[in-house]
Length: 255
Image 1: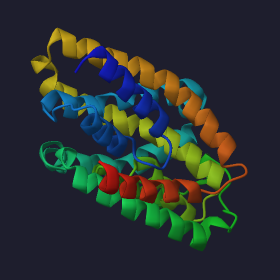
Image 2: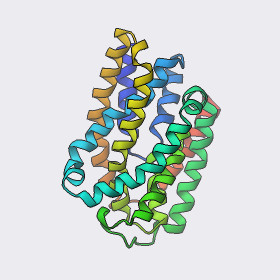
Image 3: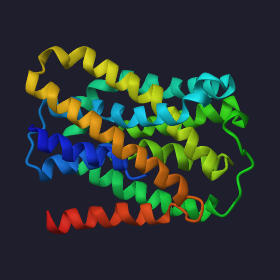
Image 4: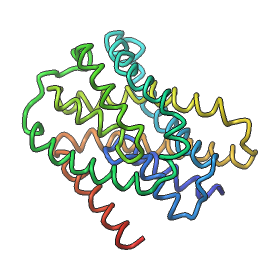
């Protein structure tokens, strides 16, 4: 992987990480379009690059985590099921699922349909939970269960948590922000675990590519977060659901 490819993947990651369209799915499909071989480094890159986007959340929401212990406690509670599922299914995800464009396309299509259905069922209802600290521990744990579905590339971590939160009666902006902060321990754990097993095998050029991807994804993710928070004030998630389905159709027909 060259620096140009790393830059492109960084843009894709930063743009898609917090939108309900699956950043991992987009990274896998983009890598295919760029002609990159799905080797060990590329799969680690697709996991680790997400920490660049997560850093944007740390900068924007560090007060909620460091000062508001009620929010931190709920984030930890939600992380537990995700961490367990990710740990036990790591080899399956790394060795098989991250190599399959078909898995990504199927998950994107089904996820898009799920967004449309969930918006129809819950989108028009105003959530009763207005603040992150008002999310119950039971709701937080269930959100973590929803998030664990995102070990399947193409599902989308943000889509799973947001739709799960809407179904639990959490206000739209609140669950979006909770999805942001929940990404911090989730992606740090996933990246740390993967790099601890593989970083010693990376070449100097690969490490440079990873650094470029991390930096670019951080800058683009900052803008993406701002966009999504403005977007949800006047829009539903239906456009993202339609986009996911249309992307799958375009891939099947033209790629």
